[in-house]
Length: 535
Image (cartoon, rainbow, N blue to C red):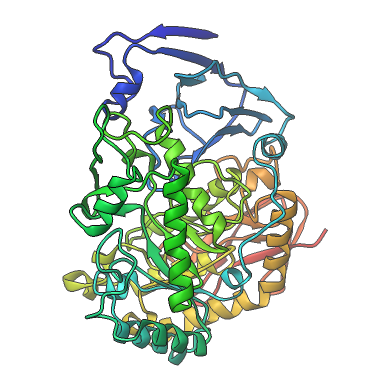
């Protein structure tokens, strides 16, 4: 059924943050009655652990919420239906229905088949077809490393080199190295801080000699009252306050800043030129492009070159910058499925519940077209979990289990240094996880190429791979392609249950199992349980 509601001036159902967009506008509401045993997924990667959506799932508004991660205006069901709109919508689950609301259009479900895979494939081919391109193989063939946890806001040449030397000395292979926030003089400036980096080009050359590719953290924000701010403001390159010809101010996790207007082609080009200069002057390979969350682009507070741009249009414009630089990484995106952009799950706490969230969020990423995704930082990406009083409470087993989840994912990333935090036994388990990944590399690269050409996820939800076998709510195991079932330990114990689909399966110990059953297996610290499909 469809309902058309006119919001009164005082009605703020879809959130005060976007009240200027919603007041007095028509809401198109569609209530979709659920089929028997139908399960729905999608919308936002960061709510993957809540998929499929239960009757208690409240309203989620894609125009202002992103759960610290990627959004796509797509919902898909295990019964072969999907919902798509080029514009953001909100949705909620009721007892026997899914309710979708839009300010832009009537949204109707599309029936594409009978399974989750059929729904995904139909939506993907129509709305985000494969580009034929994937990120550089360096993102897949070795772990990535990020200096955030070890250095936080004290990014400096000496300690960056020391971190890289620690990687190699610990037995980990060199890979992509990301230098995080505060290497620059201030936001909007693209010069290394002279007091922290006495020879940045020499630093990059040394990292290259050690086998690392080097990326820099950047953001769209600009510190007010700086030369860059005045230059950009004079040319209209910054987001403006509504009804005022003056730059707006955005509140973000590091304070208050002006912001580049990436819907302005000239501003976009100017920003890209600054990044190109970093590559030329210092030998930088690419960029971690942080922020871009739709919540920053509240039309009630900032307007762009395109006066009709929605919050998500600014998010997408920021994401499109990455297409200029093969070495890229994003945490927030709008659409952009099947593009050669490296995605990462949002920063997690050092906690078991965070480890448990990795698999459902990664399978959600796959269902939304983000095949080239990395599951956060190993052990967690929240700085305060690893320093000060909390550092003495590091759960070494949880750190290892986090790495084991990463090991058979498309990518893995370290930030907290295992050699600083772990004893010999747990460091050995980390190296074993990396070693297992190396044995799977040819298959992982095969899947990455297939994702670029055909659009199918690398990490696949069990319901996607084995429809209607009772896996709709499975959140602790996944398929790597169509060949391997991976069941890492994501809780404190040394055993776990595994549900095997129909067929025959050979486990990592060489034993054969009959499918269609649930088994309990021992999983001591160094074991990453997986099962190969053998028929």
